[in-house]
Image (cartoon, rainbow, N blue to C red):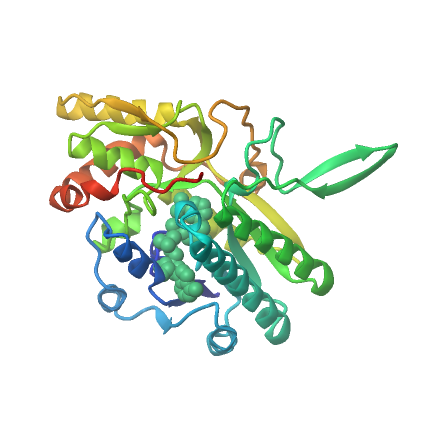
Length: 379
Ligand SMILES: NC(=O)c1ccc[n+]([C@@H]2O[C@H](COP(=O)([O-])OP(=O)(O)OC[C@H]3O[C@@H](n4cnc5c(N)ncnc54)[C@H](O)[C@@H]3O)[C@@H](O)[C@H]2O)c1
């Protein structure tokens, strides 16, 4: 099978490419190195050292056919879909930071414009060039927000005034980034309804981890961001523990979010590619477990203290985000289990490995200590 990975230089895209190559897929990829540039602009870089994409691909004997370009450019998207002859497209190439989208009007509209345009380009190119292509699109569990009822996978059975229907579950995203993903969701749903496109829309939880078996095998790391704009919560906690800084928990820390390891994220995407949507719009809630932030902080603290014998403190800081800090949360993830997903790596398995990899890059983490603290305020 030919798979075109959009965003192949990214945190998930690169290990996914390694997995697919090892499983015998023909792998094509595109990227414009947007994340590398944006992370540099906030004074940061990947805390785990990574090489350029060209160097990494060279170590793979240039096994990946790479296209350099911007997926918000329609001509580029039409050209690479035509040239690759892809059977499936995994679309990861979006502005993926919620805090970045909340900095200003400019970053909000940049996020909305670029993300919605890129998904629309893919939709139209697939409709015009080959409607059999399977589109695997990365959305976010954050699209749902934190409703006071269970979260199903995409749709809700509704009874109203004596009638019933299966309707899209209300999306209550809490940043412009999440809103951009919600627009993508509705655009993909419509494309399936009117043109029968094959869509797997992946509502992904927060991904953590530094390794997959292929990263270890090829000694080719993927990026690991720790700054307050691009670094996700567990990455920041681990980096703070490693340099002896208090773990900064936003607000009360009872906010619950869905998580999964990098290994599980990559394996789920592989499973979804093996089970193409057939003229359907299929939603997968892609996560392993959900935890309150306090549980993550406690896990990092306990593991670090027990392995390295050094004290780790936890500091609750004013929450820069506008979000509920104590709420109900119960999302489903049955659709992935139905196609064979079983957890490969738990949080407890992964935290010590992450700590070790980050400790191996301790000088970089020290040099980035000032960009870990929150400075983007949702208000
Ligand atoms: N990492 C997570 O925890 C997480 C959680 C939920 C959803 N997601 C989604 O998964 C996808 C991948 O996330 P990631 O963590 O690998 O992010 P990433 O930023 O590391 O990777 C995205 C890649 O896409 C590229 N890119 C961005 N815009 C582009 C454009 N217009 N043209 C070409 N290339 C472009 C970037 O340069 C980068 O290499 C994103 O859509 C993100 O929103 C990620």
